[in-house]
Image 1 (cartoon, helix red, strand yellow):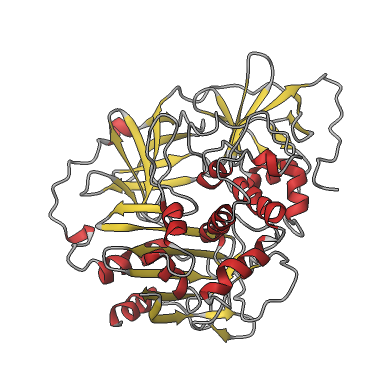
Image 2: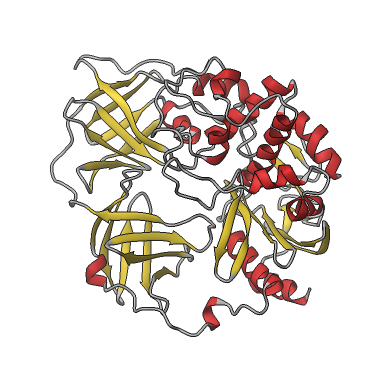
Length: 515
């Protein structure tokens, strides 16, 4: 596998710095593994094929498979209302187990709820997180009608496995999935305080330590190695050991209520782009980023696991998959250019809004014929020869284009589809009204004073005008409705309602989940 070695050499990783492990698979066997860098920088321990990494959201396909196995036992049905198994939930509308797995239940993202309530990650286990999630009453949209990626559904799926199956997700996976497949080095790490042999420490792109803190699993939390993943690729190929019916259910594409078919299945996503047809999933959290992809046409699979947040495992795995699994398909750079010219810069400059999430962004002209994009983050893009504008800096992989009057923003490092934005009004002027607002689902206050928004116990950010009549405060945006209520939007949140309170309200209180 000289091509793999050449690709890793090109990364120029230091042997004494954080790094990665790569596996190439076929027929349930590892054809080749290769590693670079250190599992623990402090002690100079090198990464090898048996080094274990937290694979974050790649774990979702394992959680989904556990729930499918439990359904095959007749103990649950994917059509079950999640409240049937978790009666403490206060959802006002039914959300099914299948919708939890497919991100179509409209469940608010728990990481965002963690931010706005102040519930800490350290020591956060399933029981404690469920106490927080029990407060959810309103969904982002009618369940089944739309897609919004939410880790919350997988936390609930893990809790249902415990209630209906009588075992924790970690124990159920060991008994019914990991054990039968022979994945003896893989485990759902549901107690992050316990030492785990051969676990790579996590590091940020700047080289700082960033390890797993929470012990709630299901949305993530599986720890594994490139050597141990080989049997999983065998299951993805033909359903061996666990059953072809389980595999087919796992890979069945999502269909929304209006008949729209999505690439996402259940914890795994179909890929049909850049000369590749397959399925896989990425995973990312502070200190760890990874990607897994399987190509059914060639039978090859590729996994890239890292303990270095600055690396691009999606780009590397797709590049290797294309080279090894589809050598007859030219890479995008070598294809004949038959694309339209990129949209004119003048047509892009302005303000844009995503009607699905209320996210907004602004585009301005930048030096050297580039454009700058600002929203919750910042990008600089230049025109490419494929009809798109591309980011070439630290966020290389991001792109945008115009299509039928909509701005499409995507990322070649992700197997998810692009986000569509429509034109909107520019940011306003002046200052937002000051006051105090209460969210009745989670018992937290939002306080807006002196140009700063404070929410819950810990979140605070300066306020600036945003497009479409909104205001931006760090990772979140908000607007004040005609009723006087404050509506908060952000990653995985949409219109979280805070009711206006009397002027003399004192901002005190402890959100549920902290005790």
